[in-house]
Image (cartoon, rainbow, N blue to C red; front, side, top):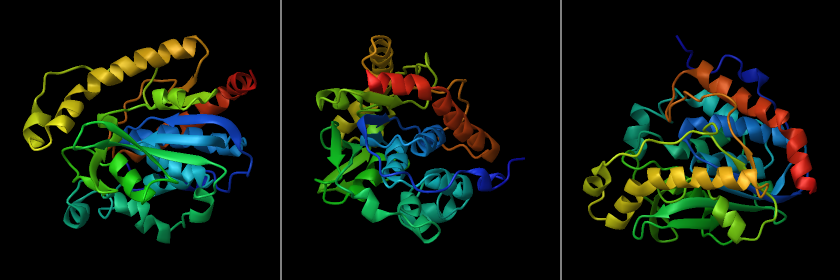
Length: 300
């Protein structure tokens, strides 16, 4: 039986990333607790002085990305691997406090008392951070830039708030939910922003595609937000199309992609701490294994 806390928590690396800034845009996919893979990759990046000038994240990617931009090695992983079974985060108390299965304020606020978030470094102007959320009025993706958004932490919360189980989050007067409903992997944004080097971190292995269904649940649940419902119902087909485009861009050498080197069986709200820990270390090892190829791509 899995323990409530990852038993090897003390092995997660600690420390601060260097002040070195690496040209390029880092694009982080979501996936709730599959984001442990991304957290492993980012820790390996920070330990190897790869601190990209721009980070854009969707959902769990936004949560991991904020700790990456603040330069705190291991913070994202420790928060998740120590708190998954804390009901203030996920459980009865979460439902009571936030009317949500997952209470994101635990990660964004409460955990700060355990391991303080380095706000000043996060807001350092030498790096850019963007969180992707979905506008519930229009169904369109919104790209909330840290330096232009009224409250970037509201945007991060909205980005990671899952449909059906979380209430909408007001960001600059706009009701928003999970960025993945409109844009699960924001590589096209990075291309449109003219970044020459784009690094995509996926949380599903190469070749993975989602099964498209004819579900009309979103139309029923969000009957007062039909544009959002339409975006949610189309999100799986759009994701598969994005994966096809990413594969092609990677083959062409236009972008660099790191994806799990083995089949991922971790669910969005996985409770098995051994599996979550394994996924973190898979990301960490995959990043190290790709380090030489990544540096060659960046040097071109």
